[in-house]
Image (cartoon, rainbow over all chains, first blue to last red; front, side, top):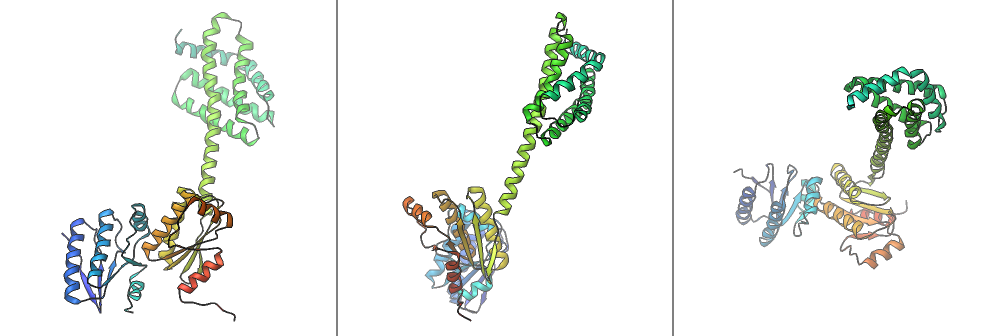
Length: 116
Length: 272
């Protein structure tokens, strides 16, 4: 199973997803992220999905769960770089990713978290 | 007599009486209406006549294909001259009259004539089908180009784009609008979009649903959407239907929406 690396930049955890998301790698990411949030006491999480071309309802739900989980550690989650096709798919599935904020790219996402 | 035998007999008859049949056919066909040039008609009909003889006598595929192509050409050239498809088909059918005038009285020719009639009917119908297919193609092309033309995405300001919608919104069109708008948002790095529906004649629950989906998809990208150009009657319809736009910003005019977007971007326009 491929693991998604988590990079700490200042007070922010930056997660760039470069692989085709499988269910188990998303679950692993969720665990890793929780550990990392506790260890680093980061204020924000940026999940960059520029390279993600396919999502399903499970992945969509996991992204929302990561958002809710981060909030428990007082960190805000911003999802950045979503492709139009992915956005359309999620909308058609009825997933609006309630607790997660979104931004067009990583730069705007960092500005949103007030760290630029 | 079997079909092949009948076909042989037809071919023989057509070949033997070509001098009499062909002019008579041209004469009858031109009286069926719509022709501008009798010479052009005669040459086209004589081509078809030759091919018909070949197709019937040899019963090979190449002649039948050529015959169909010639009929298609006849159908197209007649349509250009303004003839209706019915007139074109009728002019093909008149060959039956010409043949009947010559051979109708002989009793042993009746079954052959019936086979011949069936053949000619198919040819006439083919011209009709070609005409219908050509029309269908034109309609499809126009619908496609209309769809392309009707969904421009314009840049209003740095980071603000607008999608002026004109005409009725259906599922296919909304899908296209949604795709184009989202792609433009990503390509231009804009975080605000204005959907202007001034030119949309009616808004029903379906259209509203489509608009909501577009706004939600834009939000997932990290962009904010404003809907503008809601005319009084439309506002009335929306309220009567009980459609809720929720927390989506709606403005009366495109100017208001632009002002709103500028404010969101932290910009202010004032007197110079």
